[in-house]
Image (cartoon, rainbow, N blue to C red; front, side, top):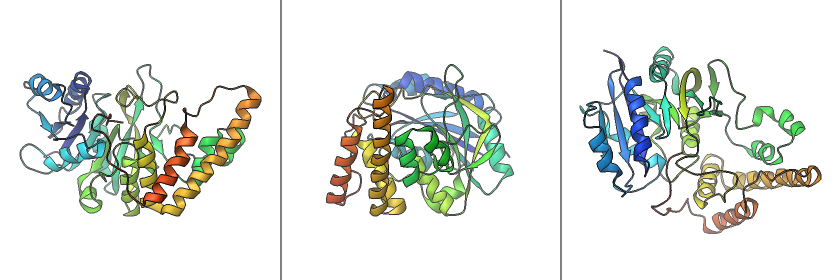
Length: 327
């Protein structure tokens, strides 16, 4: 019997695209034992009924209603906890964005890599845009130095801190990573049994980073497998761009990640580091008359949120149910 795979897709008010994603996954699951679970995060727009109806002739696909919009991690946890429709637990869980479409061999290639390398706890695929442009999906963990490099956006600084940049150079071959994008990633179920599922304090962003951090701390290896490829329509479900104000839940997630993995003091240092880097960028932008790459109000919101977090001492607050929830 083949190792089983449970593919989980979380939907929130994007039922048409989610259906297309499930149809692509259905093709990619041919020859693989397992199932596809779509979790609707309480869209309240007819998504659940639409998906139930349109997948009626796809026996390997089931649609679950999560009950409320608890975010990306919550939705995936709902699907993972449900297991396979026959009540068995899968050997692997494959997470797929509702705006991502795997190539016919993508899921098999990830599964086969995991089977061949039992210490690999998670493996991410290559991801490309509609025009074939590769997306950044292989990463180092965020740090004080990565915050400075990202904000400064200056050639000499980037070259000096290359090994600390969060996005890795596009690796042409299979390689180890600290973490990978949740848009297309396979997780070993036995690893999840040891480290737990997603931390549902995160509503959106940083949840896969933190899960991979726990995995690496427990001794599991993370891999990028570029031979497996997925087409992704980026930011369709979140709307995150550098032209729009960054939502509060992004700052909540960032703060929770640093506090959980390194402590409140490290959160402060990371924020100071970003502000110093941003100062370099602002001077460069003024001298070279460049368009600003930092989103509107970002620096003000970053500092304000740091003070609110330190004063409250609380974890990330709950978000409004109407907020988008898929990365």
